[in-house]
Figure 1 (spheres, one colour):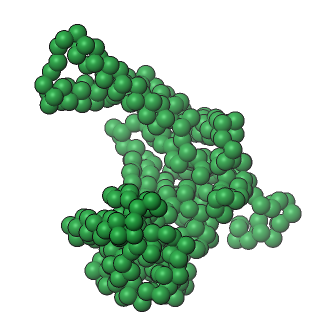
Figure 2: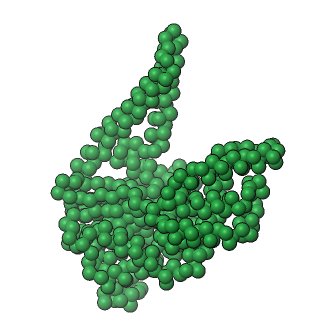
Length: 420
């Protein structure tokens, strides 16, 4: 996990990120506080990239990918729009056979089919829990498999390929699926659900799930590009989620974006772990929203129970309609009032903040997030040194705070190479 925050006004875009990274898996994860998450990806210094989530893409560290992309970018003129940099990055990842050679992609495809098979077993279990009931007979558990697999098959058959995956990717996945019969048995040998499953049908459903629902079970990296194109006078950001290659195509999804214009005001956007930042900016976070949702729902239930106890009752359909309508109105009003009291005033202030003030605010928000994580959670998934980068139209990318794994004063040859 990580925590990052991005701010934009007409003067600059500011990005701040912590340094925590989790390696390994439960029950023995390891936490490091030395990860770099902000990168200068344009040779012209006009675009920054920040990541959260997975620290690598298809087994290649994002830090290496970002720096290799910057070297390639030096051979091209400064691109007109920030969106052009996103397109160039995606093209670089899609077509780079040296960074992502074909044998690697083939192995990744097989591993992702295994992950899809586990996902399918989980869906069948969700539809028919008896599938994992150790007290049930083998006949009943196999029947649950058949019924669940039929339902999953019916759902997947109605879905289209996940964009930008193609029919060619589907055929490649089918070929790989047909070749992994023995390997699938070895991979799932420890999964009790496997022995009640039909191997051929499971491979088929895994293939379908991989090309139609990959975002449901594959790990991903959030990637944010922020800065200026050559023709843009105000900054913007673009947020996408990258999952890696599936057969011949890089699978990614667009998340959100924002551009400062003459009319569009300043913006603040947290990423990843952001509960304290959201409480500061919005007045509430997902935890408070869930608490409010549950408490207000119970309150409405109690009101109708009191009305019934007094001898008055609405028809069932009308009661449910009124419950749903008023509950939705309450939650919407709760959020709107918080935004009116917190987010919109903060945006107005952000419009007039100087670059240094934005940098200080961004850093302070991450300190607040890290403090909450340190005193409330044993995971240590937010923390470490905070890096803060600024991109302006005139100065380009400037570091307000930046950690190094080495002392620049002891590496003058490196410093001179960077000046060349």
